[in-house]
Length: 93
Image (tube, rainbow, N blue to C red):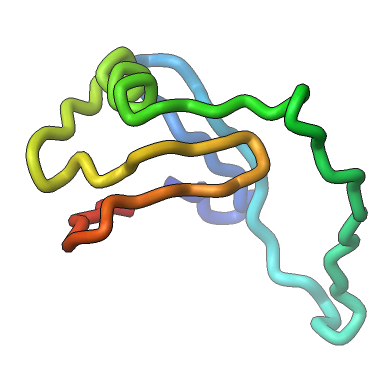
């Protein structure tokens, strides 16, 4: 919930703050630019890859219990590559 007046917000899960910040409307939108920093691609030695079993185990440890059609992820890696089963997959965002 965003506090009126200050624009401060906090996201709490299980009694602990997981994210906090401030929302504000800029004075001049034309001056707002995102600074994108380029990075060196990771080598295969640095790559963290999670299997489907690892993904859903980690989600269960955080209180998410996906089953059946909701388990469409095959693998994820630390470069952002996501492999999904070649069938209908129900994704909740």
